[in-house]
Amino acid sequence: MNDDKTRAAMLLGDAYSKILEALGLMGYPVKTDDNFAETSGRAARALMELVKPVNEIKSEIDQMLARTFSARYDEMVISKHNICFGMCPHHLLPVIYRVSVAYLPGERVLGISKLSRMVHLLARRPVLQEDLTHELAELLHTRLETRGSAAYLEGLHLCMAARGVEAHEARVVTSAVRGVFRDQPATRQEFLDLVTAPQMNLL
Ligand SMILES: [Zn+2]
View (cartoon, rainbow, N blue to C red):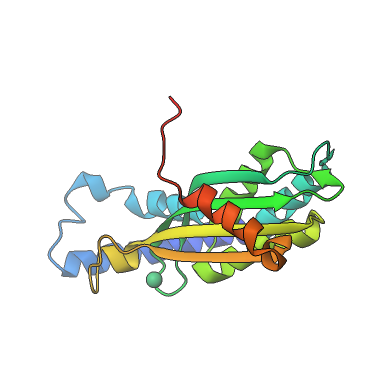
């Protein structure tokens, strides 16, 4: 681990110790119940898995984009219904996303597993769902030099589902399109039909 990451882990550990102290004041047996014994460090490590450092995300994405293939076809490439985890910047609570992305290849294509990996990586940040949606479409369009790209995200935000208005079923839906997907309504509609069709199990 680099210095900043080590320091971040320490700060998070300290912060979780404070949270446990507060839970103690709320009447919870944080000092006597051994389930809490290692919690501050464990919770810090868990958070650092939920949110990855910016430079790690950037370098992994750069590596993926450096290894693309010549396009043998020009049909829509789609990675559908990726279940990803992230965090909302307003409450620092988890968000569970179902992410679909698509693009129309230019000269190059990205392996389909890489496309999925890229989506998972970019979700693991404290960002607004709206920004994540636009960044996914933008990245595919500009960095992969596609003819067009699209992203469709459904987010279950724990800050909405588990507190406040307790809108358990509320899903936030966002979408973004670039290039051909923006210019040709039929292409955009084909994508939306594919990602919103009722799910049929393959197995
Ligand atoms: Zn929130």
